[in-house]
Length: 309
Ligand code: MLT
Ligand code: MN
Ligand code: ZN
Image 1 (cartoon, protein in one colour):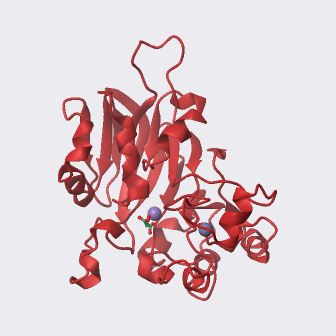
Image 2 (cartoon, rainbow, N blue to C red):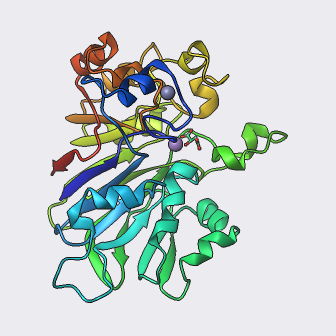
């Protein structure tokens, strides 16, 4: 199984178009200790030919351009794509807007929780993915399903499970409890290669590592995990946005209730942060925070990084 990080940044990417924070300034200036990052997505393939997107970011077109295996090969028919399916973990802009790049009547399957499929169905712009060729497949919760798309068995299964989080930012209801969040609004997924039984987890948004999630991740071979913020107040302290990590639905890396501490008890063989916000000090390869994360066994995901399992 091959896994490729298409985009390792959070919503907005790195640099973010309207952000002039120290990190964004440094990466724009070409500083050697920073790398650009497109928005949050992975691609996975069992056979190296047929691929599944895990989230579809607004940067998908550029991500495809940087990953030759995601484009038609020279002996394919005049219309063809190795992208056979997309699995959505929530309805955030950074995870669904890229679907619009997959128009042009190309057969594929879009997998998501009922909550997210309903949002797509309720927004007519997504009808550009013609219903006659693009299947919408509801992801059951806590049960594996075989991934298929465009008539191809992809040799992979996906098990979706709810994780602590909230409804997509653009769907928040200020008057409702938890902003209107319901089960299915934020998923983690376990992807298993059918032939080998090897598996990994992808959890790009998660507000807190509870007992259920800890139990699932314990002893995993590979986890890609929410690396949005280093600490709860970093957006506020940098004058960027008056929101804490918790308010955004993202657990922080550092601190007593952070992901570094929680994972230290989980015996995960390889752990890689993705969905990294432009404010996060770990983006600076020379920072003490990057050193701390690395010392705790974490890798900081980069666009184009590949893992073979
Ligand atoms: C998030 O992960 O919190 C969202 O992507 C925010 C956004 O939509 O910008
Ligand atoms: Mn996001
Ligand atoms: Zn910034």
